[in-house]
Image (cartoon, rainbow, N blue to C red):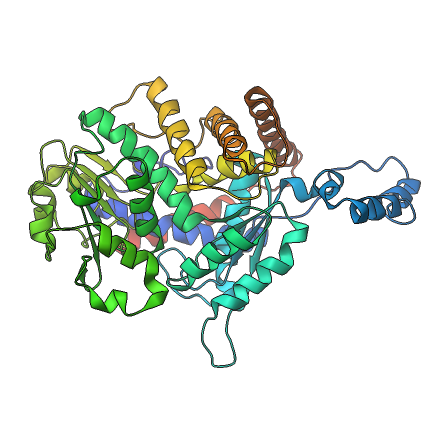
Amino acid sequence: MSKINLSLSNLDELFPDDFTEEQIAKAKTTFLKELSYSTHKFYGGKMATIPKAGIYGFNWFNAWYTPGVSKVSTSIRDNNEESFSLSNRGNLVAVVSDSTRVLGDGDCTPSGGLGVMEGKAFLMKYLGGVDGIALCVDSYNKKGEHDPDKIIEFVKMLQPSVGAVNLEDISQPNCFKVLDTLREECDIPVWHDDAQGTGSVTLAGLINALRVAKKDIDKVKMVFYGAGASNTTIARLIITAGGNPDNIIMFDSKGSLHSDRKDVKADPRFYRKWELCEKTNPNKIKDIETAMKGADVLISLSKPGPDVVKPAWISSMAEKSIVFVCANPVPEIYPYAAKEAGAYIVATGRGDFPNQVNNSLGFPGILKGALSVRAKKITDEMAITAAYSVANFAKKKGLSPDYIMPTMDETEVFAHEAADVAMEAIKNGVARIKMTREEVYNNTLKDINEARQAVDLLMNNDLIKKPDQKLLEDALKTAINSVK
């Protein structure tokens, strides 16, 4: 067992030599949870608001505030488009959630999602050069039910202050109505990262996994395990990108989706799921064991594992099978177990395993691209373009079964993604302004580098203090003891 370093680059070396791979995987999860809790308490959260304009003397307050700022107010009054350039609106995203489905933890009450929403804002800034603000809202109505109309009203009221809205961790079926209504009725992009973001990055991973396995998207047999907002949108984007719906079988908690699922049809709130009932699984295969036989691809976003996906299912798949097990915080089956069962390529949502298929590779670049050209919405074509941008970036580096996706430290992927998304927005006719691809790329890279330099400056001057080593050691001790 090694001494833990602050960079956390030696996670796999921290645990006793006699730990099995499963024990190490469990211990890592516990360690990261304990460390997260203690460091959030140490810092009081992750985000703060600081000025980006200079203060060269106290009379500058009269320019930044009254009376000088009156000129800004009246200019925006006369032309609302100026709000994007005269305020931070043009680079600001509201991360909105009612916290009813927070990662793998379910309904955490409105305030319970703040850690995740601040995390999204943190990643937006560091990876994409985008400012974000966490806004967790109470969606309960007078009957004590979560009301999607309350979220819709809130976002509509909010939109004059931000350039885009990132919806997050809203349970189904409310998430479908919230997104589809706001996409059509708002004048800024409203993006549901659990759905569209997951769909885009999963498509990127699938594109490259199929390249490595030398299989075609329109010919492979695919099984989707889980039918929530994420997997239904993944399936929809894959079909739009060329997947054959006749070769797709999707499962929810009650069984497979097919045209005889009258329970789905009877509830109009699940219209997105019913669309897949009508399109997919024409042979109406009902059990997962039969569906998995000879399948080329498994895409699972169901519930945290590690025993949700069975090794026997994977063993029955086709040669060079592709397994995406992306539940958080623990995948439905650990990668080593999936490989032992015969999987050729395994991806998860976690960065401590190879092939992280995680929204963090999508939303910073996608939102930056949309903001760059002041897009009015993010179309499905923009999400698919982002997927190919990410996939092609990794392809240039050289693909392998353990490298189908870029990693978060490959900074340029976000600039390429932003530029490609911006060009697609212009092509789709949803951009307010036009820019060249090179302009978007260079501006994005500049903003990312400035954000990182600012963080480095604060750290180097001890304005962001290092957490006490004892916090790391205590978290490690708890993790080791939890699996002994």
